[in-house]
Image (tube, rainbow, N blue to C red; front, top):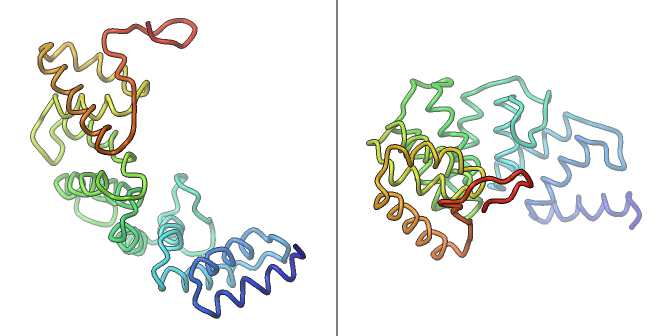
Length: 219
């Protein structure tokens, strides 16, 4: 398709109220896809589509204001402002975006622009787990919270469960916890992990009792 014609179609779609067209136009002008780079215009489309409730725009705008190295955020189009970052992460999280919810958990855990509040951080992680978009992103944070008692009571069974849900990434952490748990507690945690997987139609091998081999496998 001719790029100029494609751009015209996107602009027409935006005028008709297709909010994701605004996000695409933001990327077109931010990266210069077939047009000259125009950051002010890119920002205008990003802000407008975020205001209309488009989650990806809200999240990208939040990352732009936060300005760290995480996420696919645009850099250098706004001045860093953690309050505005929190505002837009909240907007996206309230619509079910788990990535934004986990970012809010970090903001409250680290006290970025707000008083440090472990309980609120934990609550955002719990909310993220049940969100429709990438809820599994909360598992590493929940495992840490339950292991260390951050915003909640220490619960090694729950901590093990969430490490188990991380597959191979959680193996070293599970080994550490196993030294503090009974075999019954470990089996309980694995059962809880399996229940979660069945309910969410996902599967992560537990690797319980297996050892990491030089070829990268577990036996």
